[in-house]
Length: 405
Ligand code: F3S
Image (cartoon, rainbow, N blue to C red; front, side, top):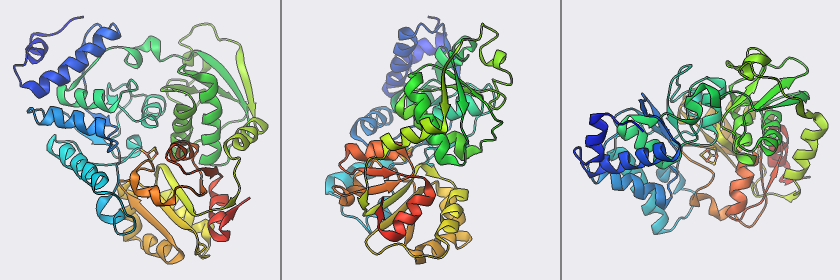
């Protein structure tokens, strides 16, 4: 493992204890994964979570003099100013959230609080070496944009943002980016929901392997489709890289996707029936609901428009809360265009900077919710609220009727 003289001096503490701690972590990762050296990065994304461990690590670095040396965007925690108008939290929960915002501000992070950075708040270019955490962000930047990132943790991404370097291993190297197995897809993909369910199926088969998807009919996924596919593949599996033949940039041909190695036999053919079966496995619940929760990963402005179109002027049932978590720029655009105000009149609220996996949502726990995101259902279930997973049009109908069948 080669370290430059400057890197050795940082490891020896010459730039302070905060930088030393960050370098110790980067160096330990490099040794663990047999990296030959460190490589410079120009950006990182940190999956800040507003949970004690992440906040502790950031405090350890900044209280000992460390600062970000490249722009480091952040995941959401929760909008304490706005959401405390609606929900009760404990003093400890509020204090932890405030500590989190404060410490990431002090270390010099770029406070985007957005979990789909590749769609707008931190967009790397093809071939760029980066350090991104957030399980739904990494497959997007690797597979769709062709940037190069390992599945970083919030801890390693922040350390990389402080040092401005990351170890050269894993998805930074050509040989680890090629496809490892083939899946055929013979299914019609209507919207981001179908792509999410497909991602869930693929993640189950893939584990952490790089899937190559070959579609029977041509497909034309948009940004939200890719995002939902990757988010679910990273939830049911540990996917950080995939290829769609003729679609994603490192898979113009099937030969390119496999790095000109022999093309393996297809491991599975996924059809609409498989997607339907998966959906049924994910959505065993029906009955009265108290919450519609959308935006895991964060909704875009286009998805906010979809909600308005599907509501068609109808009001949300008085027994149902309807919350959309969105990228802050989408919320701002909705404000400017009065979309936010129009949706509020129908009973829909939106909030930026906020994740579904936070204590502010606890008043809904113990009853049934509905969401278009299996990832949301998975995380909320662990906190005590079960969710029916349905496509957006069905979520909207459930919001109006107050129940899901
Ligand atoms: Fe985003 Fe939180 Fe879901 S970070 S992807 S809203 S679990």
